[in-house]
Length: 330
Ligand code: DGY
Image (cartoon, rainbow, N blue to C red):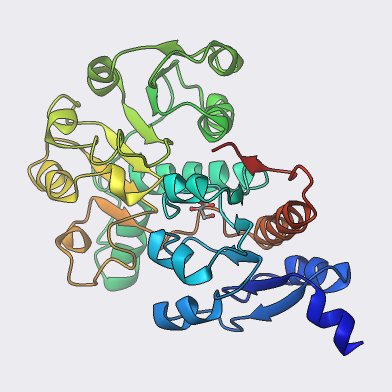
């Protein structure tokens, strides 16, 4: 009835998330849902208006969940559930201060992200985008001995910057390509994870010097902001390939442009940039040795549905005052 509905917790869903998640929310009978029923982000002003008085918020990574938003929401807000494993768009201090619980979506996307990272690595190292372009546009004169040569994984050293679930999953997939050695760096050694892939813990310096392929898999935090900069690129081999499927903010893009255009490193594959979308006029788009994807690492139908389902279940559990399936410890 209308009266029963009016007493249910109010939830704002800031994006048309995949159907599984919406189903879970609708069928729960536990919440009143208001949905920003669009594939595009809700305008900030609209979001600030809509969150007012809500008990829960289900958002995606384009929404900045900061003091301004939390103040606009007001004291009823108990749960923020983001449909992402990354949480750099959330001001954790502000959430913690207000006692708001946070759900996120680790694990369900690990396979999809690792798979895409391997695809991007091979696309970059074997110059596939350049190659299809040449084939289509008349550059394919004849078979030539060193034309479109790239770098192979066999006998290589693969470096992982930030060893977590995703880094391990990437290494497991690369191993059958006959990688010789995995090395990694992180704030501290992670022996349980490293053991799975027989990876050696090294300093940032050594990671730069030794990696033939360097995959960035760390979270974006104040500590990792811009750590892939001139200092790192200048230590890398000029035959090395740099891959980033984490967050654009870990890379200093001016320094990367310099490293790529001067031949300091051989190539880069980026699924993430600053800003997103990266303007089509950005210098990185002018480089043949830079492959740029529009943040699609988790974009499989299965994974995006699983992410929406997990985000919905996190939200509902949080509103019931129960432990969430995947809760971020603040
Ligand atoms: C995440 O989940 O943080 C990704 O960037 C999008 O899937």
